[in-house]
Image 1 (cartoon, rainbow, N blue to C red):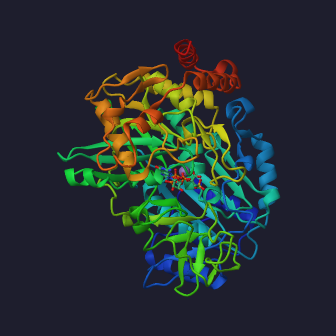
Image 2 (tube, rainbow, N blue to C red):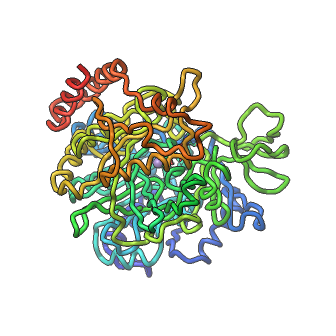
Image 3 (cartoon, rainbow, N blue to C red):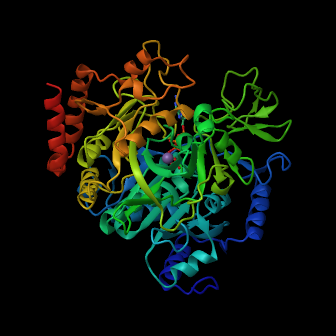
Length: 594
Ligand code: GTP
Ligand code: SPV
Ligand code: MN
């Protein structure tokens, strides 16, 4: 094969091979130009894949509806195709690579007949940054192309940066018949390859995101000495103008986008506090020349949860969606040709189409207008609080790493680990209630280590070992401090105890003070917990009392003893692959609880 876009033989040979397999009518290279994007939007509207929204209210914005059986990641059909089952580990689905290729090629064969193959060269991370990695995704979906153009850096400049290297991630996506019985999302970490068939939804098909930037990249990081994590990155600017950066890992739909774009409470704003967004979902982390850990956001946009996003909860996210955004599976207001979702405002449209494509009257219907996992794909540049360091090829230095999840009971509002290894333990035993971001039951507590359960591309125990090993290379005063937070603790009536959202800055302030040894804490069996009076409640004294705070910070020995049984059972799945440092941490916890 020849092409005017690249002479890279590994690229051309691979594409030629895939053309032979899927047999497209036409091949289109995504060059990164505005004209091409415009033409694809128009074509998407002609085919009915995209709906052009009111261009005065929502310029360059479009709506897309996926098939009703295809609205979330499918963890049960996601496979790590490593050479052996052990390399994938007990928390991943595994398939033998040869068998997987054969099965996937049988499904994909001839599936582009009568269709166009789009070739998307993309960079995860700023083009040319030492952190960045290149991928090529082949797809037969205009929706995928238009999303990838927002979520990643695409086009000719990426091929130029690649040159004739064969260090790039191969991605093949085939819509096929969107048959849920033949839907497979397969990662081949040893081959830098991803194959996704029979889906058209977000995390299943935007292959740069979870498939590459987490599953493949976590494996690359293990081999190359860096880390790929399901973490937001934010900068907290204090009144002196100093900015300190925090990475935080929460499971899907547990508050990363919201925290990353936080608006400080009024009392903090008056003092001069600001929060800057570097990333809302994924961090690539490596040691910098000064011995500290640095992080970049490999993405270029936000694929955010729509429901609940409004001008109170997250005005920055809402503002990010006012231009150049693709909405997926939200309600379509026919009167204004705009979009609506639950929690946007108290005024649902009456003449609308719901996410399934049926007529919908929001004032009368008991059904939801938007799918609970409906999403917006918004360019990062739209975000009013985007960090000036967003494009910094060297990343930002990390002061603190924060883990967190949805726990109605047990986990206190915040606690700090005693040191790096204990922090890795805290991340490894994270548990959280499941959400609509993945197909399946919602609200079930499950272990989700480092929020990476569905995203770790190799054996989770080896991944923990990698964390321990990274820690060994860090000098004590340069290693980020590690914390755990829980915004979701509930009282006996089932109400959230902590107001959350902007008020989470109060907790971040305590975290940053701890990083600089500026505040004391109480030592408990699980780690350091704040003294209630050290969490600033200025402006919310009527909502949260010191007694409430004490209740949120409570560490119940009985509940934690039960928890250690669960941890022991979970660790048991990994046999003797569990790092000895983590086994020792579990022993320490058990002793502390005696
Ligand atoms: P993914 O994109 O799936 O990785 O999700 P995410 O982690 O970015 O979650 P997001 O910020 O979109 O939040 C998901 C849900 O959690 C939304 O419905 C929010 O309203 C809710 N949420 C976020 N922050 C808070 C908080 O501090 N308190 C409470 N109670 N809910 C929150
Ligand atoms: C998540 O589920 O964590 C997401 C959305 O960020 S998806 O891209 O579908 O994985
Ligand atoms: Mn996510």
